[in-house]
Length: 435
Image (cartoon, rainbow, N blue to C red; front, side, top):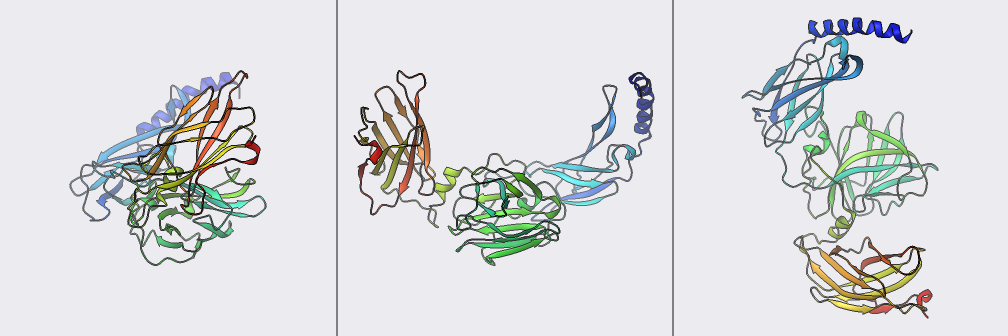
């Protein structure tokens, strides 16, 4: 068909679509009730918005992704009724609801269709919540399995380092067996057991805001009939929850940071994780921002079960690498809270040594230990802020040494806490740094 003929037909098509819109063939209304999940009390005054996407006219052009919306409010009994906004012939009678009530979490992506009767549940909005993200488990190109570490917020092929690990994966039909390392636990609570009446965005992470304290095993088998929340108790006594919905399970493939080869299968499970002791897992999938901070989680993972961090002296290793990865300095120092220390670095051939000044240990409002340090050289001065430092992960800082060369030398300073016994205090010089 020529472009000219298409242009001549557009007015006729637009007139036809306009007639369909005016006809108002929107099917039976959607009705429902919004209640408080825990008390079953109705929630009045909530705004309910119905959305559909379909064919329509935009700027005189026929488009597919036209958005239609309409809204209403819940009455004193929490009930509502509205018709889907698009004619059935343009959007095929299905859509989604968004529900927002003052003081409550917002519900989004609630699937609906003409004539549906829904029971919707919300919970009070959260002032504080635990962090979350997407856990990735699956198979590498060679068939090797990989799991997920919550405290390090990354995948790993080492089952001993993973908080959750796939023992077996079958794609069609879906079968997944998950295991936990020694000292950990796993438990499944179905959507039905939780009394979740309707699907919405993040529904399997929204309602259960505390992990069970009992009933954990070492493995869990899931299949296409399993829809619910997976609770994890880590070996270091932290809790996490993952949403498992086989109908909405995201799959992928490709390279993942930290893994030795591409993945042939990645299963993506949304999760919430509490880096502090205790089973509390408050989480709002819609308003959650950011993810798990690896350094913070690593430091918090060492907090004892009672939540109290004693302001004791701690021993640290400082390691400096140049841009080629060669070790320049390796120092150990024991710091008492609030008492600054200064150290001389290793003597390097034909180079002035670094000076580490005002090494200072402090404890923040959250009681976690932090270290700050200044590095002085011939032609530079670097001052760090207070940095969380743990035994699990090195804290990595970078600084530059300027000289007559075109580009500055980039150094990497690694800080990591050590066990307080059996380590010599003072300066340790690696062989390649000695004169």
